[in-house]
Length: 235
Image 1 (cartoon, helix red, strand yellow):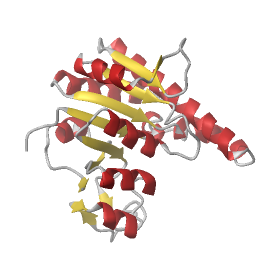
Image 2: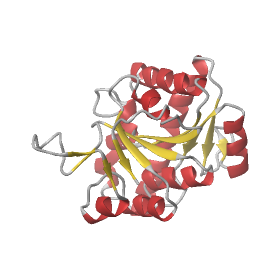
Image 3: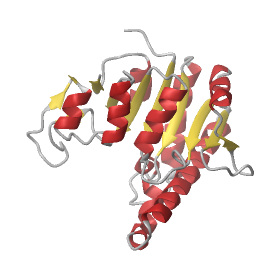
Image 4: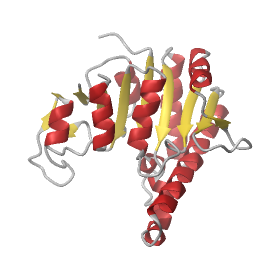
């Protein structure tokens, strides 16, 4: 299969923490930036959504006693911190990027405007979408799906700690079986926990495939972008 022209890469916040429990590991971010920049140099247009778990985990205990809306807003702001960190790493490599936020903060980043985002992609810039959907009760998985559909990405590339979708957690169960491909319906009915149900349903309704692959294998973002059969395809 030939590669993709435009992808939406979904990274967890934990991916930026490296081996730490929370926070940002500068070396890990640089390494991620290098992989993403290589893919961009190969001519693939890339939108990125980063979670906020690595920042939010540090305040998670306090957030348990908070109003859900307030806690979700804190989580959205955590994604902005991560997006700026990734953008900085890319810019230091000479790769043009734009951080676009769903919550307006003009001194920090551009407000998200769909047509402008597409224009940035067409000009070869990497666009990092921050602050989720700006609405509480929606995860960054749902934000990634929404942005992927808006920018007409061909696929959502969901980077994880394991090399695909399994029938149970392979980090806990050695007998876990990996799927080469699986349907949206199976993911939902079996509760496979790849992404939240809202995002899976949105992908199903709009026929947007999801590739789940291992981020910790160097070069996997490039392999996935070039259409090599890695991980699990949900379609």
